[in-house]
Amino acid sequence: MSSISIKRRGIMFVLSSPSGAGKTTVAREVLKQEKNLNISISCTTRRARPSEVNGVDYYFISEVQYKEKVYKGEFLEHAEVFGNYYGTPRSTVEEYLDLGQDVIFDIDWQGTQQLAENARDDLVSIFILPPSIEVLEKRLIGRNQDADDVVSRRMSKASDEMSHWPEYDYVIVNEKLDKTIFDVRSIMNAERLKRLRLKGLVGFVNRLRSKN
Ligand code: 5GP
Image (cartoon, rainbow, N blue to C red; front, side):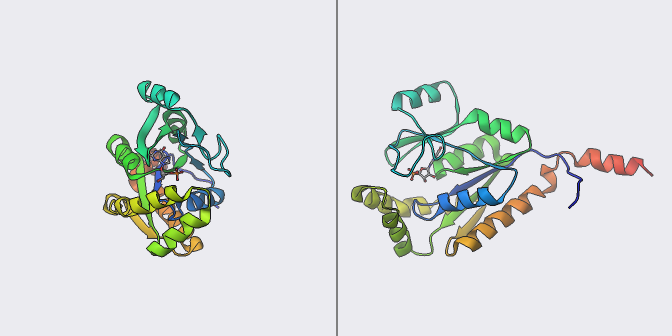
């Protein structure tokens, strides 16, 4: 392993997909395997599902708290999704980026558009598609954590959400979890190596050249 590391700014890796395409599982697995990667924990006004833990999956907040955070500019992006409000806390993400650490986001297309408007150079966006509509439905029902009407509302929204795929830098069809994780990590590696992100390269090359 090389001990030379060239300074760079952190990258915001966004994963979006219709709900049930497996993006949350992908994000959590990639997070386990990648060092130097942090997850952005969103705030939401949605009620916690039985398996969800406050501060781990989301910060579960009230609508009043949400509106106050929007008013104070505490969100990097925020949006209404399926009748609930979601927002990405700004300060933690900015601290990670400044330290040269990467952050992964599980957010929808509205949030991705806002990040692209404000910080295009720091953003790499990946859209995850299900292999088929049947698989999407099975995953939503199999999750067994949402009421039937919620599942059917999410299914009918899936087509709208999928229409946003051309706005993303990369699109992956999530058929086999291992392959999807491999692809996401390949994208991450390549993006980290991009010359324009390596802010420390000028100084490094100057030092190399001055030794002659
Ligand atoms: P769920 O309620 O199933 O956890 O998430 C519903 C949708 O909201 C998903 O598409 C998820 O990616 C999106 N989402 C979660 N957190 C945020 C956020 O902070 N901002 C935005 N814009 N979308 C979010």
